[in-house]
Length: 183
Image 1 (spheres, rainbow, N blue to C red):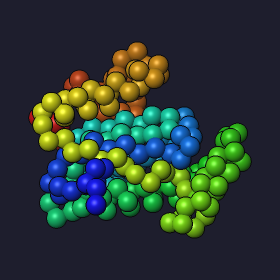
Image 2 (image 1 turned 90 degrees about the horizontal axis):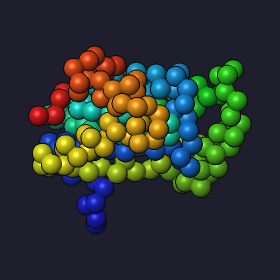
Image 3 (image 1 turned 30 degrees about the vertical axis):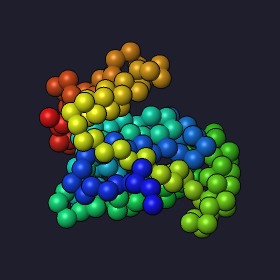
């Protein structure tokens, strides 16, 4: 069995990527980003997630994370994805401002129908592509990549201008979520 893209070290710090199916740009609306932030906060406060860095992009998010002792990062992520999928699908359905509602629902439903692990809808792609950060070089590289993502996408001029990111924390400001900084 391949160990690539598996969380194999329970004490490890991992770079994780979670993308919507078909790369649907869901996180262009504040209300959907707030669901991600609130869900990450819940995982930090109640499930044992240790968040080191994060960014939410229009169709994916990146985390650098680990888990508290005796907690499983894979289980935390599974629960996070399951909860946020349900919450986001409901928010999309109920949003009077969502002009892309029918199109997004069709994509999520057709992807769910093709996946035997789902009953109706699939919001997230299956894998989190975990990459263990087992050196200072990798930590620094992935932290820079994560924070530069909105700049490279042309969304902001500076990393710390992006609201849904930990970049502001790493330059001495106060972001939206509690972090354990990488050393």
